[in-house]
Image (tube, rainbow, N blue to C red):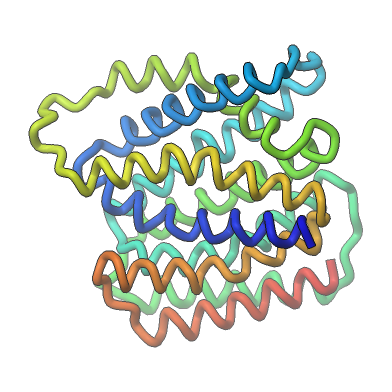
Length: 282
């Protein structure tokens, strides 16, 4: 139950990521936003590691942590920030419904499991639902934004699966903390090179969005999420991600006033059903 509670807290925190990113990109360039949130979170991670007396990493853990960093520290934040310049947060959240499936797929690849044929059936149906929804939007959607969201889901699924595998041995919060520190030099350089030219144009909502994605989406959420995966198991706790689209759609509607079309809710329900079926036979 501690694993489920911790995982649910992580999902609730992640649900605010896309709406907060949507607000932040109104004031910050996407590349600067991605690097700045990583630098801020890495500074906090360094403090946590120092207070906990964590020692040096083993050399064999560095490549796997590099995958985690590329997936959840760099890839997902950058790709979603770029996508949210073309689509609304509510539209993008439909794609997040595929994240549990992407995590399961990379878990299969990394663990060498052999899922039943029904797994691939549900997987294909979920992908068709999302693709059909994106195509049906016509002028209301953006092909570039949709492709960026698909790429974001894939790299995030890889980062989740790799981080979950490592968290069983290193610990949940240690995995994301070490990944952030590993990415710090490169992210700090990018942040300096992409500093906004006019700080006066950055409004208070953009600053609040940056603060949320830096502290909560980039660090605190992963502390709960990886801890939950380590305590409760990837297969069980990972299904809590199915709640994320619903929480995210609600936040996008309540906080940003974005329209949540009935079609978005229907597609999200369909995607969630397909992911649940795929997990059942994984």
